[in-house]
Amino acid sequence: MRLVHARRETPPGAGDDIVLVQLLSNPSGATVRVNGKSYGETPLGMRFRALLTYDVEVFKDGYSPMKARVYLPRLNGQALETTLAPK
Image (cartoon, rainbow, N blue to C red; front, side):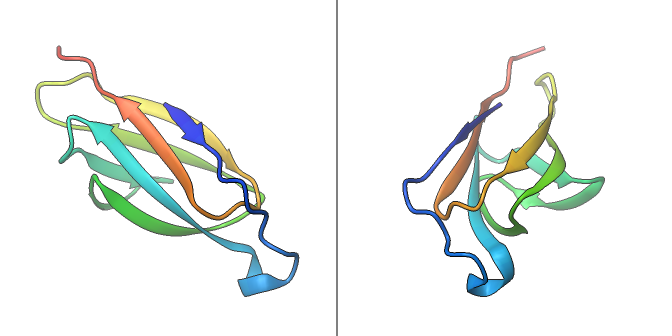
């Protein structure tokens, strides 16, 4: 899993340090689970509190699941990208 960073830092105090992250997978249509809770299928835009670490799982039938612990800096426009390997 790869976190692609944006170039704009969110100013301290702006929006309570909430950042928008796009979750993308190849193939698309994979289920996204963050800290044990399912949020939908890729591609998916989500808002997170910055400066925290999250346990992210991306999985789809017929593919090996991808799990990662991801720290999100205070940057808007980030994307979390992963390629799932066929089983």
